[in-house]
Image 1 (cartoon, one colour):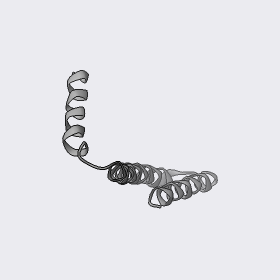
Image 2 (cartoon, one colour):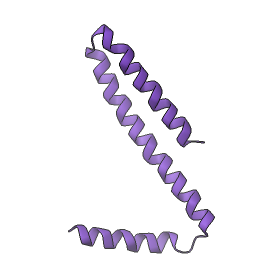
Image 3 (tube, helix red, strand yellow):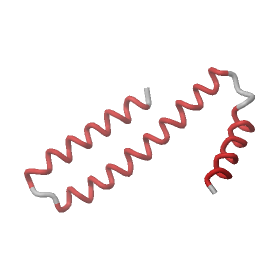
Image 4 (cartoon, helix red, strand yellow):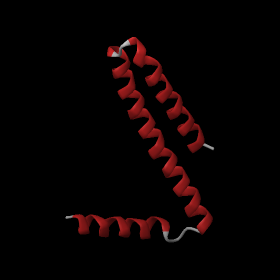
Length: 79
């Protein structure tokens, strides 16, 4: 159930992160956030690649603009 899952997440958090200093927790949060963004960007780009293969010529610039936005998002996450 959802409540059991939440309890497990809380337990894992307490075991893994409770002994860390605040700055270490912030660093770990930033690292994990960057990983989530990297995965999101990767999946979105794969979707766009599929769309580009069958896109009409006038839609290609829109898709390429989305790729640039994703690249900017990824670059910001890695700062």
